Image (cartoon, rainbow over all chains, first blue to last red; front, side):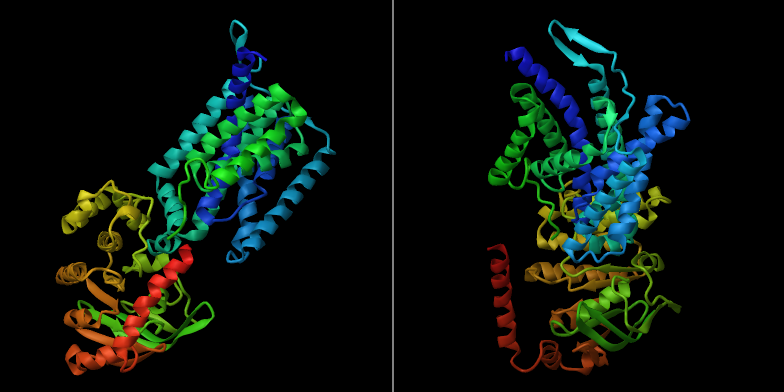
Length: 293
Length: 258
């Protein structure tokens, strides 16, 4: 392996890692606002992508619209998850909602398996025919597209969080729920909208995974859930900048070991990275406190 | 203005209020005194709509607001400055104020901006720290911010839960000066306090709350300060009890952080 292969694998990984960043943001945002983990989030993301190809099977759609449908479908599923697993379940019990979302993960997974007979479904790629070359070094068009789209999604999210009324509500509830209510902010509404926002991001991520892998399969659910949680822990629970950096880092790290050690060993090293962080930096990259005081 | 009739409510499993009846008159400063655990905070939270009462009614300006959601209570014109201030620690001072005006944000931006200016004129210390994160402010500044944030809701009745808690004597003086100013500007104030000495100086009317029930209602002159303090801190060994609770708090903190 020479330097060129090294840079090539890291670059591809960084670009693909933007998807992990989106998934990580979804986990971390829910954790930041509700101090809960929504384990069905990865399943909702993939299911949203499935809905988009189901729609595309009836009506021919431009690929970009397919992405949009995936986001909206996943947003709707996320709202359903909130209503079924959080809204009416006592939040004081930390295990109740966690187990409920495990159930939801399995349910969504099963619905997808039954609807598709477990067969992988092809997903339309965007800009896959573009390849930018500098000698032996090259950039895949579909990965650049994924990276740019993720970046746009993140900028929109940040704008929403820091420049809108909904963003004020979201941050207020995350930081001090009692005071938020005293200001007239509704916890239920803010929580539900936060779920919808994470769903939109997740659906986009699901569609991008489909587009870059070329197929959608129920087998994607567990790996992206695990990767999302790893990103969330490495970035620091509740930290969005942390999730972005950690997502890119995990993408680069995993792709490097894919090139260097092969697909069978790849995830081992990602787990090792998580282990290193849990031991030496349990608070995550930035160790920003999200505690309520 | 605010009529509370036979309110019973509980916080967790402890029944904290056992039929509380009191009223707050428009344009005055009403104080609620009582020992720890008497249910003062529970009453505030119940009026604000965070807790639902089990029995009884609350009416504000002749309209029943019992069991109304917090946003409805705020819209009717009641704002609560909560115990321990509860500022949004990772938001800066300006954002905290904006959050306080949450219900008006969509409709009247210019008005909110104007209110921010008014609040800053009242609290110049906050204006100097516009961009500072609220979590990094001193205790007194956080208390001012909590009051300022509540004012951003344009309340007709401002409720304050232990605004002097944990503050240095000079800062307490300043907080009470602010309370007098707010009252002079026409805001009705309902104040919960542990500091009976300061509270009796500003109150027009006060209530003693003991074990979830109102045990005294009257004007400051009607009960000697000595007796109020004794009853507000439970019994004659007030001095000793007080030092005991003072010692308890740091110990508890150490246990939690260790």
